[in-house]
Image (cartoon, rainbow, N blue to C red; front, side, top):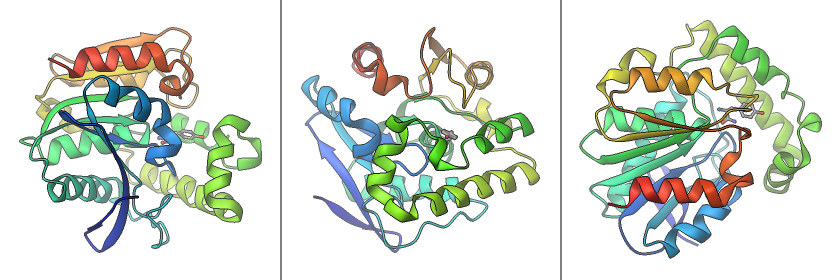
Length: 249
Ligand code: TYC
């Protein structure tokens, strides 16, 4: 199981396949394995090298205990850019889900010369009070749907609720600070960008993907009419097909 020393932390990552590298970034509390099992299996068979790290403080990248300073998304973006440099990848595609989509946007903005293509889903460039109210409905992890809770429960055990509480608190602080993640800077993204989104995503509503499409020049948007937040897990075949078609020349 590979680890790399990145900016003071031992980051765990999956690294599967040979070919042009794709950095895959998980959602909140998630890891390469928990969030991308169908992609780790299928994409290498299609000629991609998939690198899927566990963000600091999540999964096997513990210790340290996860912290949520005001710039935690940016910190993750710097971690992952440093990981790719350590792995000798000077240019790569980035895929990201949910929090990973936010981090993918920030990574692309901070390292435009590194990111060749960006594919994100279930992401957002800002949070509003309405978004935070949706997140608050998930604050008690006993209320999560079992298929979303099970991998987190397995990873974090008794620490799951406390970690999620801190993530929810961090979102509240982001809102108080104005709620901007990168909404003013989307026009600076110039690489080919593919937005995918579940039309029935109840946690990050479709309006976020539509906002991203309007802000990023030339961005293409694919909506899965019946898709929910985890569309890449629940409709993996169709999802992977679209992703491969976008990524491979
Ligand atoms: N960006 C958040 C994430 O990465 C969106 C979200 C919030 C998803 C609450 C699920 O219960 C949830 N998880």
